[in-house]
Image (cartoon, rainbow, N blue to C red; front, side):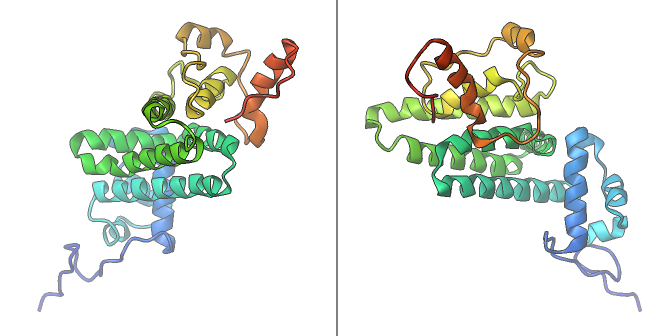
Length: 250
């Protein structure tokens, strides 16, 4: 008599519900994130992930139907974690931290790799990028609610558009890590801060020539920065002009 075939189509092995609370699934998740930070998703194989996680390919298949299911798991959980991190700062309602949180997230190589994977898979089937779209919508809505409650109804669409522009810059930086958009540069960060605060009129457009020229002069270390660091460029500028006003804040 032949042994029963389980839902995964493999004999003698029961399916395991994939969960980050389970050690082997967590190992696969972490190694998948790491590999996506350095490789295009097409270059990441199931055997490669399994070997890096220290488990067998068979153990992979009892948790995930195929590679797409695994990538969906990574994408869904990564943006859920990013959303929770942003929500934690939003609950404190200290707006100056929020721009810093977003810049740190999109500057992270693993997060950027997941953004690329979500968008690329989204061209094949939109459901793959839904977690990313939902994350962006969540961020936009929360910033609008917190920062623009006092803004006249007619002005809100323009203010929300400025937030979406900042998110677009962050997304482009993640999609094209070798482009001129460098999130470690003070100028780029200040543009994002101005857009997120609804100051679209004062936000300077990103110039590829200017960014290229200032790349060696204004690059910040990629370690964690103090919450007030994004206001320092303005503080220096204002002091040099003899202004009595403090640094600009969101």
